[in-house]
Length: 180
Image (cartoon, rainbow, N blue to C red; front, side, top):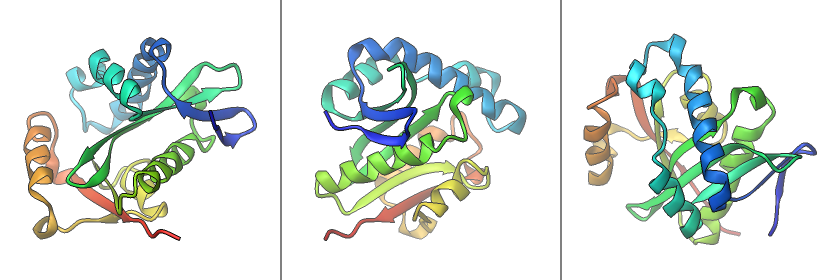
């Protein structure tokens, strides 16, 4: 299995069933970064990606894990196919391992996966102004999608997000991929 290196201390590969409990803890820890922003409710801060979703994604190759040199999972990227794009459902990195390039490495792995699947775009939904959200993705080639250009599946997903989030602070973004 090939590994991409975020640094010599980390690697990225596919998730396995034995990783899932640790990835839930990573997700919960990563949510603590949102606590001071007021953008997520207490309930949302305590929530995590459901185990069955992670298990299914691991089984289909839609879950990538960042590992410390010891092999312990410290981050993940969860993707799904939506509207003919590879949709980045979530990136989470444990705060103890933040600022090490893991988010960028996971994002790079997602882009590589989209190319492998011969998809032309990677899409995502994120908070527009949080430094580790919209501005982070913009630095990595993502551009905000105008509301008038949003696909029906994006509008459907936005309606679901509106149940728990202030969607006026969120946006959909896309990175178009060229093939060599």
